[in-house]
Image 1: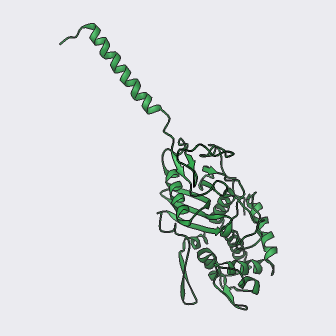
Image 2: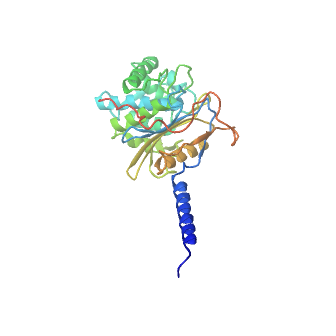
Image 3: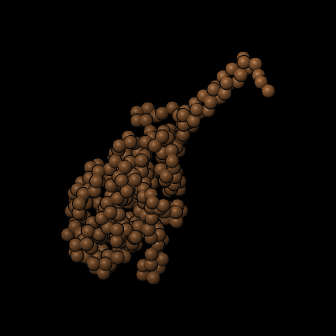
Length: 324
């Protein structure tokens, strides 16, 4: 059956128009996504790093100074692991608990003066329970009797690792205006712990341990919540909000996720899970999420004084870890 020439021409024009519509739809920029942030902008900081390459996949306020809270104990543990590797201590070494250490506020194991704790239990107490009395006892032991001296050693080690925004004043993370870090620096430390001490990293995946005949349970609810999460550490003081460094290692992907300043532990964990899922997704490089901070109206514009939230520059990466 043949059609008049004008009708054939019209059909061809319609087909070309339809093709252009389809092509236009497939090449259009993806719609803006909104990422809920469970924190106020002055406290929030976050970074996601591909631990295999050092490439930054996501960052907001990642170099802004924040209070580390009990993330401090990651450096205390780094120093203790170094002492183990050098032979200065063994896992059976008994660490004395001074009056100063025993007097630290909770969370703690509630030691009395003159008691001791072995190094293996001290590691677990800091990782699982985030025990302040144990962290201070370890600091005093490694600092030659002085927690202040140990804090100076911690700061020097941080700078050696490339943690340029970090300064420590104590071994446990209790409030001190001079004790500061950044999300980026905590990512560097998380990577350093895993790369430098793979034989000890299993401690960070423990969610409880036995001590003096009783079960001591931990605070890191990310363990067991998301498949592939194998550590690392949580932290909280009122000035910092709820902090966490999380390691994800599954299906050939290895991420370090840092979130600081959340308003609750549950919201913090939800946010970490969202960042993991986002970083594993195929559209990470193209998506440009708008952050919706706690208390901000969904239709609100960008907050004044803040840089545009979202992905870091494509070539942004953490510096290579120094040779040890």
